[in-house]
Amino acid sequence: MIKNTGKYYEKFVQTIQQTLLNADKFISGKTVLVELDKKLVNNAGVSRQFDVYFEFEAGGHLYRTVIECKDYASAIKAEKIDAFLGKTAGIPGNDSNLLIVFYVQIMPDDFVMQLHRF
Image (cartoon, rainbow, N blue to C red; front, side, top):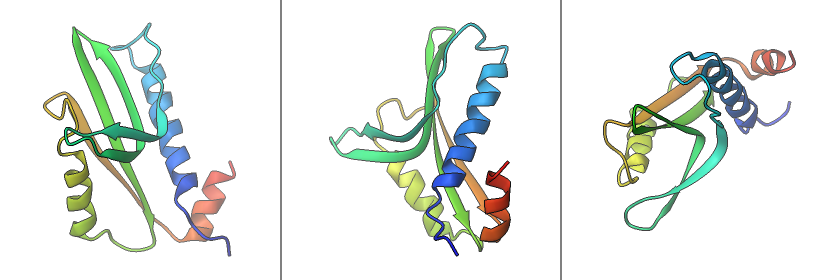
């Protein structure tokens, strides 16, 4: 069996987000790039990696979204969520304009691989 690195799921989430943003009337006319493996530097100068990231400006405000993807065969422990929230602390602009999303997919690997073949 192929080792699940989570990269297929991250790409899947990126594709979903890009499709939703392309269809969004609120930000129509703007090009929004959904990035994989985005590195952001926090206020302490430490580089932090996020699985999926995008930003756009609307109404004079910059809106940023960071997404952590977890493709596990079992439930996610609270420590993983706490670690993700801790990772976002100190990111410049981490206020009401930073949306923090945690995508979780819990399925057997063989089913996930079938989904990504389409």
